Image (cartoon, rainbow, N blue to C red; front, side, top):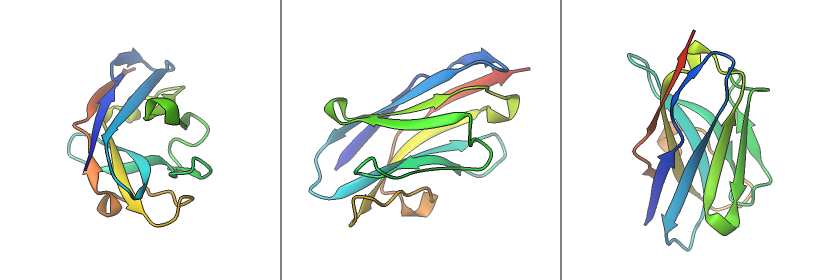
Length: 127
């Protein structure tokens, strides 16, 4: 079983930056990839970015490419999402999730492939 806890959400002005953290605890013998998702009011939860268990593979939604960067710190069991040049349309609750994989280099960014979820952290970008 894995537990995930997000932090770092806040209210920022457009053009600003935030760094979200996803602390992973618990134990599993399986490899797992970490994905960041977001859900805006009235919209479905969408994949934003992901990183593989090995850290060698990452992926980004088109809407955040060039602005967001995902990274991991194995020593701290934490995955980060650095968000720059924030826009009002980035406003959402951001969730991190872990998906069990059989290959270390696989990156998962689809909601139905994730097995464990955090509780979410609110990001609000004012115009």
